[in-house]
Length: 111
Length: 110
Image (cartoon, rainbow over all chains, first blue to last red; front, side, top):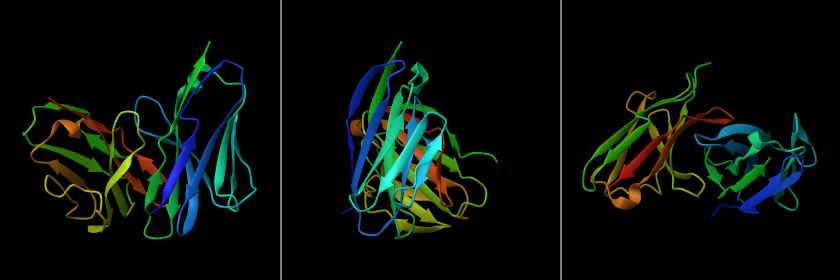
């Protein structure tokens, strides 16, 4: 059974700090790994990773995938209160287009 | 590009009542998903459609939940009868390579 584990489950930091969120997975036929940000509504797409070692970057957020060790990290530098959200990791297998989600990391950024 | 539309946004019902949710995916997306997200957890897949066919409904409680996508576009998810533990946000999503979510329906069962 495909599985996604995220750590930590919650994190409290102060504005300006840098955070690293972790996602590890087990999947039979890996196709891609996706990161989402979820505030008080539906998840919004951040990154899709398919290849090891290639960093995806968007502003202060970046992410990288290690397909050998089966994990990904999401980095947020110079955090702001607006970064407070639940960050979800999901994997997509090759069978159909099924997505399996982790439990999320709840990030709280204090002023 | 219009996003995934869902209605209603909020619903409060009593246990044993019935409820239905509606979803209109992004135009051209053949794959549509319904997820249940309980507070503090990640989304759990209930059912996945490819056009109007079911790809995966292994986690759908079929004794009370049903879903259809008759013309391969809009979809409805129904719960009959509802239980207290069905209180959750019901998310609809559609995908090409990337998955996009609708705003969700927050269901409260009293």
